[in-house]
Length: 237
Image 1 (cartoon, rainbow, N blue to C red):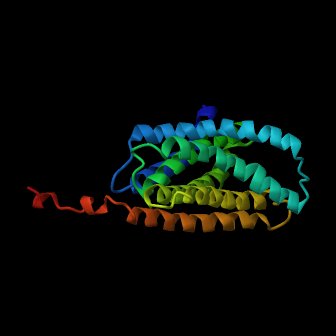
Image 2 (cartoon, one colour):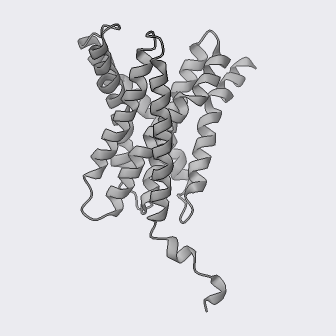
Image 3 (cartoon, helix red, strand yellow):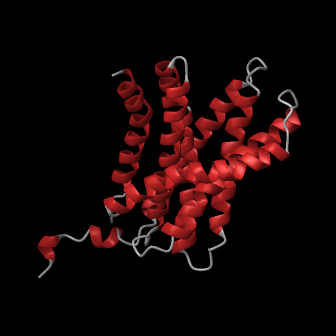
């Protein structure tokens, strides 16, 4: 029973965020089967992360007390590898799909992949912790929404790249944005042994949430399906 509680605690935050984003897709919702596939691609991205990071971490040792080496650790060895592992599936599996046909779809698919990653990561943390419930509750308000904000920022630019002529380079801006915020968030947690620096992680999360809210609204308003959705059916025929 305790394992089921921990599993539910690990997955519930991501499920809630995923539903929130799905229903924010007002004008042409994505096939639920493709959204679920995106989630499981996010789970697979955890494996990709491990494959990439294991040899790199062996080659590049990090001094836990060095501010500069922890920056390398946070931004390159963790954030870039994790975000690139998700990016692989968003860019080369979901991006070419015919259902990816409006800016907001970038957010839907990137968040679904991101939550798949965060879901498995959450399960591993919660199940291996000596106090899984406390770990799950803390991550409910920190790590899981953080992963969602990284994904929204990536998806915002991916959606713009797909739907705006001549803007394909924005896919890389999306990867860079997610990596930047992910790295900043992790960097301050890695330095939390210095009193008060953990607040930097919370600050980066707050900024990420603010920008995510603006990105969601912006890509909603850029939908080519807005006009057709506002046509009054009674005036047709």
